[in-house]
Amino acid sequence: MAAITMVGFATHGEGDLSFLPRMFAVFIPLAIAWFLLAPWFRLFQPEITSSPKQLWRLILVMFFATPFAVILRGLILNAAIIPIFAIVLSAVSAFGMLIWRGIYLLYSRSLRA
Image (cartoon, rainbow, N blue to C red; front, side, top):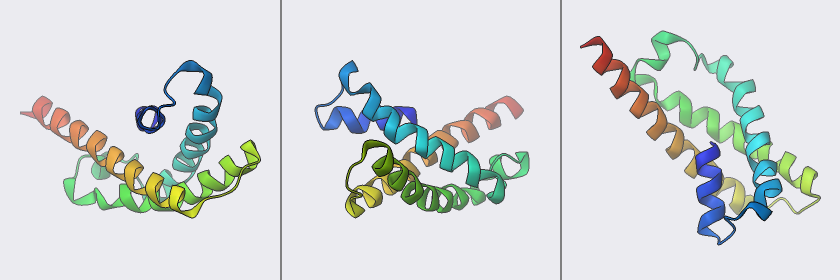
């Protein structure tokens, strides 16, 4: 999530350290929402994390976590809550989590082989 947040800011030309507080205003609410919802979907259970058939859970959690994070971000920054930002952040974050979990799956399978 941190890497996705940094890449997102960099794509908008806001990659230097002066934007770090705004990056945290996106990352921290997203991380909090993720860690609050992930256990409900058993995303920390070994039988779920080791199964490619369970990757849909990541997408579902991210699409629930991101609107909460965007609302928190708006409150923290005293800024408007922009629906398209929530949609894009949901999609990109879900994709990033899929890549991360895919790498983990490949790595864990190579250890078992």
